[in-house]
Image (cartoon, rainbow, N blue to C red; front, side):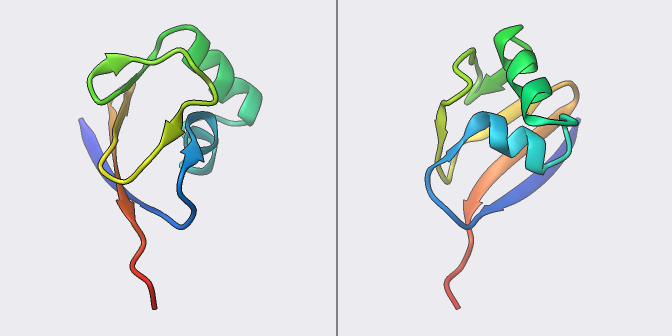
Length: 75
């Protein structure tokens, strides 16, 4: 499984937007479809809410990818 660290600049961010921005879905619509089908887990549990709020510390897994959420450091 490939692990990526995602630096969040805005908190919270909706689940479907992360999948789109991290190029795991080609569009927001595709991301929403993937979530609705139950193909995405958040913190080890299947998540079907497209608007699920994601925070630093959350872990998203989908089709061989693991995304670990971190807060982007303030400059």
